[in-house]
Length: 106
Image (tube, rainbow, N blue to C red):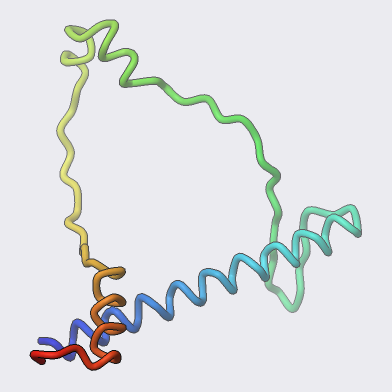
């Protein structure tokens, strides 16, 4: 079990590294497209489209619930939500640092 958790945490770390790299690459692509005055590029059949930031309109359900609680309850629906994995990444890193320091009693 310990080996599986360690592997999962290693995978999580790799995902974070790749996400950071993805962000940097996207920023570089956007900069290159902006230099050329384009928002779309197709290379070897692979397309990339840059969508600029914009204002989105959303329904303020919390405010509506406060102002009209009976009407809110009338239209409230229950929907199933998939479970999630949760783990203490920072706690694991601290434990690893502590273990490297050769703490006593272990």
